[in-house]
Length: 291
Image 1 (cartoon, rainbow, N blue to C red):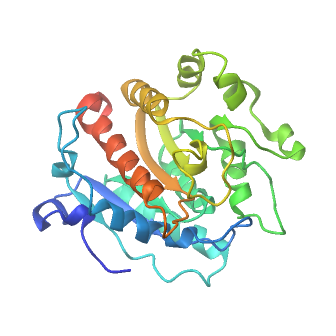
Image 2: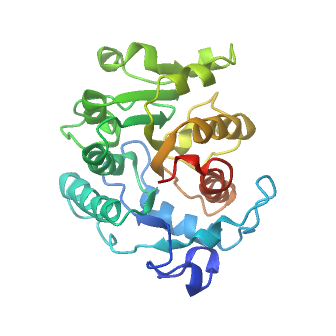
């Protein structure tokens, strides 16, 4: 992967010393089971970022001036085992936690979240996970692998409160691992507006946010490995994220399962726009949780 700055920003805003934000691309999809290709997600994401307007209208803010450093150290990892990949992610996230950076990750399949959550869980005793996904991802093992993307939230669910939003597909074996009051199925989300307040109420102060692109409806985000009909729309999602950033301290986030389609650029750009929106909310609107 060519080592460029985010959206072509200058060195003043992209060097590690001046940057509050670290972006870690992780091109890994070895555990993907439906359609592979999300290892190309980070490359497509960074290409799409070149076409991003760096002024955000809604927040009247240019969040890139907080500094966005891209760490390219985890590359060419497709052939390594999922267990080794998880350890690499854990190590790099822990490194930047100690440097007090705000850590963001672009995947890659959802298995990359296991390492991130381990590292944040060591740092924050009261960590909760906000899991945005079409799938529950609570299997303890899948296809003989503890680190499969379908298991990405199982380890976390044993250690932390995990609030799951947008779920509309799961295996019956996963039901026993669901935290009953913390799962918000998509069909229930569509029938009331209270889900936003209730789910945020269930989060602890410190929150790691994990967003699978397939949480969105395929009409706005078709380029993902396992699309499911009936997902979230753009402005409903932004309304929810603004509430979350206002009331909780987001300690880091990832965006996963972008599977680029060379004939359709829209999902790549949605992922970039989402990334930039979340940073804008954190540093413009709701920075009261910053140390």
